[in-house]
Image 1 (spheres, one colour):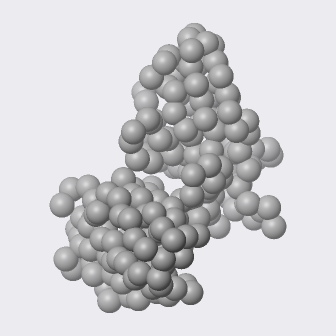
Image 2 (cartoon, each protein chain N blue to C red; image 1 turned 90 degrees about the vertical axis):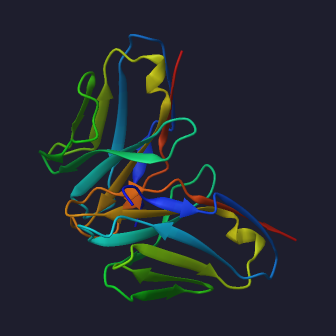
Length: 113
Length: 111
């Protein structure tokens, strides 16, 4: 049973470009969470999605960031017009139900030049 | 306590030593406390989820306890081995499902 998959593992973008980060949850999991680790900081919650629905986006920056989890395919975290401050490690986690253990992927390291 | 706090920030022990770390969390609106083990360049690995006051969980040489009334959890490692070297994270959930993480305890086990 494959774990949570994220791709790409590393992503380099120039300021103003778009970044798309993908997350495939564990098989059978319909709850997906995105977390961000800024340099020298801990993991911070961004958004919680359940198939086709955003349940909690209280940790998402108000502008340029969006997330989706379509009926088919991976969850996507999209960052438009990236800035240097977006450089961070972005982690995805999934769970079987909303109250159970969240299993983490290996993360995507985004570097904005 | 408003945030999740962990201590110590880092710890160096010798192989065979037993050690423990502390996680403090807001006791109001508490639902669950999670412990993760995180090695560099890998995914955080789930260790325990605890919900009830007085809960104790064990996995091999690692165990954890929970006190929800005073808002703390301890993680214990018995007979530390070099492969136990990692960052240990705790996270709490309130009424929602998002994890609020501490900044972790970085453990280094030396031969």
